[in-house]
Amino acid sequence: MAGGWRDTARTESLGKEATRNPCTGLKDAVTRRWDHGTAAVQELGLETPLRACPEEGLACVGVRKRKRRMKMWIWPRGQVRLVQGGGAANLQLIQALSDSEEEHDSAWDGRLGDRYNPPEDATPDTRELECNEIKTQVELATGRLGLKRAAREHSFPQMLYKRERGLCHRGSFSLGERSQVMSHFLPNHLAFTDTYSQKAFCGIYSKDGQIFMSACQDQTIRLYDCRYGRFHKFKSIKARDVGWSILDVAFTPDGNHFLYSSWSDYIHICNIYGEGDTHTALDLRPDERRFAVFSIAVSSDGREVLGGANDGCLYVFDREQNRRTLQIESHEDDVNAVAFADISSQILFSGGDDAICKVWDRRTMREDDPKPVGALAGHQDGITFIDSKGDARYLISNSKDQTIKLWDIRRFSSREGMEASRQAATQQNWDYRWQQVPKKAWRKLKLPGDSSLMTYRGHGVLHTLIRCRFSPTHSTGQQFIYSGCSTGKVVVYNLLNGHIVKKLTNHKACVRDVSWHPFEEKIVSSSWDGNLRLWQYRQAEYFQDDMPESEEHPSAPAPAPHPSTAFSSPQ
Image 1: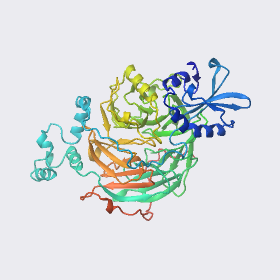
Image 2 (image 1 turned 180 degrees about the vertical axis):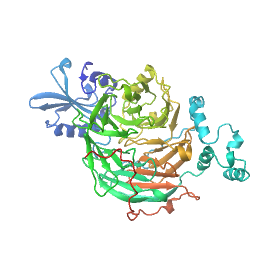
Image 3 (image 1 turned 90 degrees about the horizontal axis):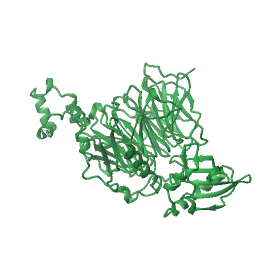
Image 4 (image 1 turned 120 degrees about the vertical axis):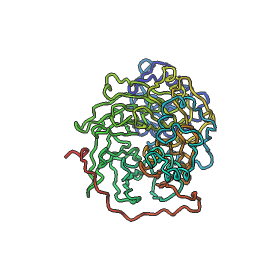
């Protein structure tokens, strides 16, 4: 097979890609993708595929259109590419389709049952983390810095006794001691359930914790009033221009608007308060015919909207200019995750199916010279989500290799590390959307050049782009990392030692999104079983028989709008 075929949309060699994915032992994969390939051909107005050629690649289909002979390549990552030409040197890409997990409803419904039990890491490797400043930061934020082991393990009554005797700093608990106390009261009880007719995709708290926003496959965004300990739905908004499902949501900094993305050329902005719903479409003007924005983020001043898309590009939309200002070719495959590093919004992160997390400086980003300031490599499969610690230094990434990794952006990966991650990702011959995790993925293997500080194992990443996040600063000192799970759980890790400290189990399908209240000990999980669940602490552990029936609380009046109107929709 020729090695010089060029994909002009990705500037990636098709021949090189095919070489990395030999067809030996993959004929079953060809069969699995045959139905989707046929559908893609019919959609493009082509005739029925003439033949399958597994000996020429993973899945090569000969097709005809208006007497032009073409070949359709179906790659292991689910992409469909059509090329035409008389010889290897004259081949030209004419269509590229992405078959990412959100594109169609034939994907697995997220119910694995007992067939997959993610193995926990009994002995996490903490050597890199022990030598890093993040350990000192977390211990300081949780009141453990400088204490001997016996002092660190003081019980809650002992701490209260010390406070009563005036032995605490300034007569009361410090912020670190408060976080230490709160760590004994992690959510363990199912307090509320809301049930939808279709899969729940996204669910996040606002920055001040007063509103919770949920996005469902039924194209509806629901807003809940969370003030004064309540969790009452006060508004439902029908999203516009939705393809298959809403994929990501975000609040604006002033808290008066929200954004959502889907399989569409547009990111939409809608108001939270007021009688009517005003939807404003932000046109990203993509080059791809089938286009989706998998992840969105908003700058701290509300001016710029950042998006990661299925064409391997980062998009920046300027609200003041009301136009797309940047389209950066950032990754070799889908961009599944984007995030700003801190409140300055100058440093940003992106992660994609090429298993690489890239760090960008907004001040130096140029379309004609799309170079990141550095890259973080160590994952063996695509990245599904990125969350920043908020200090422009540390971040975590969730991956299809069934791990979460903790990174320090002062420790960029070498060229060797990046090549090792790329090679590991291209050698994956299974599809996380509907196949079981291969046993080789369970192996505790560290790639050459892996620059991560810590790796967390014990949750499953299947079916969809499952999210993970740092726990809140105010209530926990960010001493935990929590994640959704393909087995229907919420998994909470201790950041410093990598052990699982809590599992919240009740969902019947994968938990795609999780969100911890910024000031209270409450976690909300959004699952593909159509349920939104609110977890909080209760003295007695939760038991299966205690699960309350799904209930719809009566609509509550909307919370008062924020005074700031810096992100108001244009007239």
